[in-house]
Each structure stands twice: as structure tokens, then as C-alpha cells.
Image 1: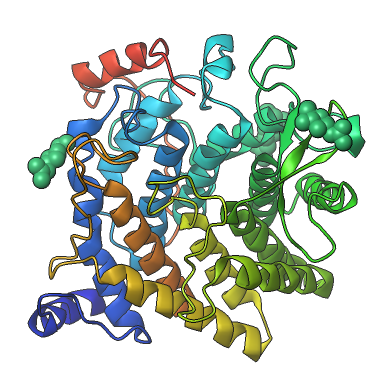
Image 2 (image 1 turned 90 degrees about the vertical axis):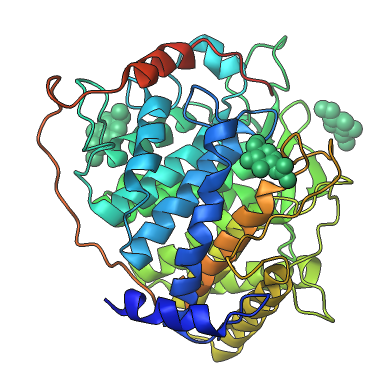
Length: 434
Ligand SMILES: *[C@@H]1O[C@H](CO)[C@@H](O)[C@H](O)[C@H]1NC(C)=O
Ligand SMILES: *[C@@H]1O[C@H](CO)[C@@H](O)[C@H](O)[C@H]1NC(C)=O
Ligand SMILES: *[C@@H]1O[C@H](CO)[C@@H](O)[C@H](O)[C@H]1NC(C)=O
């Protein structure tokens, strides 16, 4: 396999910092392979019994994004050495109801698993479904009755659970939280991130099923984002609106634009309707105007970034959106601008890495958004998300022919370890922080 031939060569040319040719697909895929081990290395010591990082260190929704980094890597590299590790955690997370809410357990719904949170987990399992096939199941090497849902069902069930949070107030859209009780936390916000994640789930489910139901949702949500002025006439994407008075919350964060670019770009590929591509190009122009440093061309500007949150964690899915738009676009100028941004961002980010592709800074103990000892694991998330996006941009594509592991799960020889079973039980009662 190409990968194995390339790796030793890379080893020779690495000095203190990794050096690679950012225009060479094999180089970039080999770098991604090398950067995966550090991505995993601190997880075991810092995990919750619920298939996620300890929430005080890495928030639950970010764990959903974290697993997606692995599934995406597997898709284009064909390297499945982390599949059991990831799948066993996903199996615990999904529990016995083929969703991320323990069958819409009201406690979980108010305690930090809101629509945007479960959306990231749904997108992660969507990637796994696209990688391994519509009928592939979670943890095929660890069969346990009721605990091997199809990745597809996790994505589809999450899509429908999120959709429950929509109504016609202020013209449509989906709420951020899952409780409509006036005494619950922030019951009135229809957050942009929830709506663009649901769009992305809808586009990708449409791609896999060709069922127009999903496409209709995507079109309806996008039309609402524009008619409500959450997406402004200059394609600035604002944070959402509250149904108390329908006025837009004008905060601007880059992360909304990742799922949005992915949705519009992939919808263009699926339908060949040029309107989607034009809209995606317009969103890209706003991304460049607001979040890309004009001097360095890096995706490094976050207008409202909380002090001390660096890397912000907001960029991970923007890189992915840029790569998806690059693949879909037929506009050479836009493609070249995207390539410049991804390569400049890669060069800046990779300066943190040593020759083993360990890219995490040691920050002062107690720094926010790090492990307790200051190790900034999000640095590695960022490195891998850039390498994933560069690989996709360079045309690395599915290396795995969809396996159809439809055999029904059965108790018996293979079963969940005792610790994992305990984790499953604990998973539904652990209090999640907001
Ligand atoms: C997706 O989930 C919905 C709601 O549970 C269900 O009605 C539908 O059949 C599912 N779609 C597929 C293709 O399984
Ligand atoms: C709309 O309501 C929000 C609170 O939900 C408030 O902050 C904002 O000022 C209101 N805007 C207008 C135009 O009344
Ligand atoms: C920080 O803590 C992690 C475990 O959470 C440990 O693996 C790592 O070695 C520690 N780093 C340093 C610099 O002590």
C-alpha cells in the first residue's frame, strides 16, 4: 500500500519539525497517519464512563467532533487501526436506544445534550455510515444485543430528534435547547449552529437515501436562515434569534460557516443545481472577509473569541467546509483561494508539532480549555482537522469498500467487557454540565 512506502521516507526528512509537501497527497495522508496517535494518547486518562472526554476538560459536543476526526481519517486513509477504540466508545455513547439521548431521557435533554450537541454526534456517525456503508453497525467486533446500532440509524434518529425542536415562531427554524418550558435554560433561542448542523445531516442523509424528505428540510431551513436575516445580505452568518421578539442576535462566530459550506457544496454535487454553489461561494466570501487574516491568509480571526481559548475550537469544522467547497466548486479562483487558506493555516499550525507529529502545547497549569496540567489537547484536534481537510482537498477518497455487517447482534462469545457495561449504566446518570 502506498502509505507504507511513503512513511519511512517521511521519517528521514523530518527534522525538529515535520516537513511535508502540502501539495502532495501521499505526504499529507502519511502525516495524518502519524498525527493520529497523539490525538488518542490522552483520551483514556481523561475519559468519562459515557464514551466521551471528561466534560470539564473537553465538552460533550466536542467529543462528538473528536470522534468524527477519526472516522473521517479512516474514510480517506483506509487505515482502520483505531476503529475498535472509537467504536467501543461510540457503543457506550449510543447506549441501547440507537440515539444519543438514551431514548430522549428527559434528564439528559435538559442536562447538556441539546440539539446542537447531539447534532455533532449524529454527523460523526454519518461519516461512519458513509465510510462503512448504510448497513454497517457500531462495534461489529463487540456484539451485544441492542447495543450495535447501525451508524446510519444513529444519524437518522438524531436528525429526527433535532427536528422535533422546530416550530413556526419567527417563520420557522429549530431551537437550541430541547425544553420549551419557560423556566428551562434559554428556551427561546433558535441557534444558527443547530440549524446548519441539521442542514448538513439532511444533505448527507439525502445523499445516502435520495429521499426528498431530507432535501425539503434542508431547503426550508436555508430559506428561513435567509428570510429571518440570520444570514445577512452580505452573507454574514449571525448567531440566531430569540422567539420572544424575533430579533437577530448579532454575535458572529466562524463555526456556523463550516456545516453551511459543507451543506451547500454537497447539495450542489447531489443536485447539480447551480444555485447551491453560488450560495456556497457567497458564504465563502464572507468567511474570507471576516475570519481570514489578509496578511497571512490563515483562518485565524475569531471576532468574539473568549480570552484564553486558543485554539478556539471553532475552526475544526470550517476547515472541513472549505475542503468540501473546494471539491464541489468549478471556479478556479475560489479553489485557489481555498487552497491558499488551508495551506497557510497548515503551515502556521504545524509549527507547534515535533517530529512525531505531537502538536500539543504545554500551557500553564490551570489554563482554561486544557487538561488539568495545561496540556492543550485541542491543538491536536486542530492539526488533524487540517490534515483531514488537506487530504480531502488533494483527492484522497474512500479507501474502504462499504462492508455490510448486517448480522444481528447476539450475546455470547463476544460481549462488552464488565467495565464497559458499568459504563453503559453509569452513562445515563452522569450529570452533564452545560
Ligand atoms: C429514519 O427515522 C425515522 C424516524 O424514526 C423513520 O421513520 C425512518 O424510517 C428512518 N429512515 C430510514 C431510511 O431508516
Ligand atoms: C429582543 O429580546 C431580547 C431578549 O430576548 C432582548 O435582548 C432584545 O433587546 C430585544 N430586541 C428588541 C428589538 O426588542
Ligand atoms: C498531563 O496529563 C496527562 C494525563 O491527563 C498525561 O498523560 C501527560 O503526560 C501530562 N503532561 C505533562 C507534561 O505532565
